[in-house]
Length: 107
Image (cartoon, helix red, strand yellow):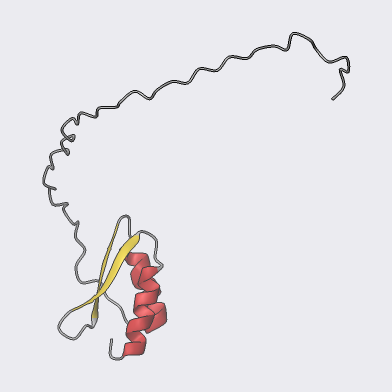
């Protein structure tokens, strides 16, 4: 890729291809694409790049091995805390019915 316009075109084509998860410029002059993904069809991607840029070739196709992730111990639960609650004083109320109801029942 000889100009920034060609680089932009190549990045756009590669970014929308099926299965691509990462696209980056690579090489001493940033003239190569490094494409990472799962299930990427290299032949179809090369063909799409050739349609836009007139020249594209596959240099290396390899499976990227996952690096083993270090096992992290689960977080320890916090030490128990003792919380002392003081009982609240209760107030008791009693409902006393009126011994002589009013003659009018509509309020």
